[in-house]
Length: 175
Image (tube, rainbow, N blue to C red; front, top):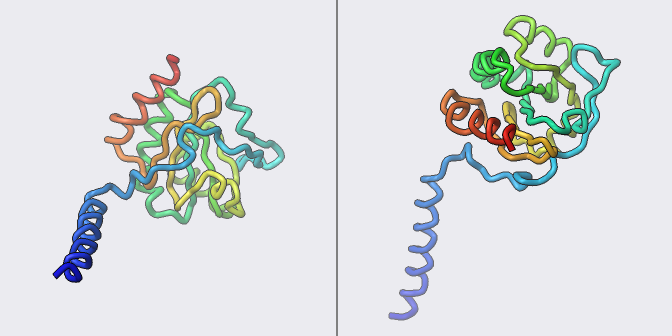
């Protein structure tokens, strides 16, 4: 009888973990970078490749890093929200053009609108890897000290902006 209870107990524990896991939101994967300094980088700007941008350039400011690409279907979904946010001038938005041709990225922004204060080019994806990017789009909220405070996996939604990102940005700007 005891020989049957052990496998049954293991099965029930595994089944419990499965059901708990199915109830989780896959967009809320905890990032190991939350509350850690943003990875340092220095990349060429999309609009002017002779100029660079580095993480240190935003020291003392709260800012968003939005990882996007012209080939990204989900980026089209979130783009109107970014354009609207950009018009408010609430927070600087830096675009990280990920694994994309610069000409394709420029054309995409010209066609769809450019919400970014500037965009930088991560052609080989190394900076994306340093930030733990699972895929585009992803958005990071980075505080005045250069610490990552929030990571949105997948396209931004109106709810995520209103309930999480904008309040967090305001709190960080006032601290």
